Image 1: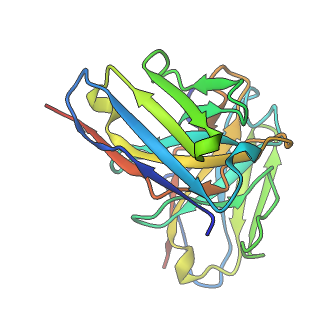
Image 2: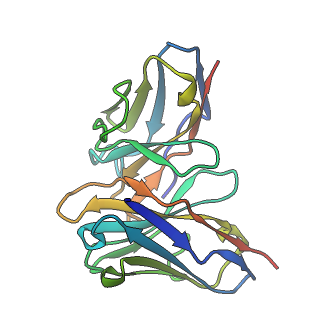
Length: 122
Length: 111
């Protein structure tokens, strides 16, 4: 089955760190660009970060730049998001989302995980 | 990078057609044909409905269509059905350093 499964969420204190993981199965991870998208409780979607298939290009939303780091391990079929200096406003459901294939130009997300909840609170 | 602007809510009766607008700028919607639309039911992950302005992924109903004019994109749902009741988000590639942006979201209600 083609799917993405996120893990690593939980309760984190302000200023703390967390590492999210996303396990991909049913397709070849190295063929796709990947993203993290988050959704605060009761709010809309917010794109967080992008990584190209070979990890050569990484991009971040202004709201997380300098605090979050995206990475991937294609051999382990996994995507990661290292989050540091966490703030209350980072509280959200974090989705792993498959982007366009490496040979295609575009910007869309055709496969989503169920998300992992990160709560930043003391 | 500000979110794209969508109406907060749109409603229609079963069988009717509705259109959701998504307004951006010349740096995102107006600059690229990379507009996508997502449907999200409560407690569920978003689902891709339209990509590259007007293309439907396999399995998405023919009742769903997308278009773009200038800095505004639109999603039309024809023959409205109860299961269409959900939140809808547009998205676009952006020339800014942040790469991409989503819309503010629209709640569709089937009367």
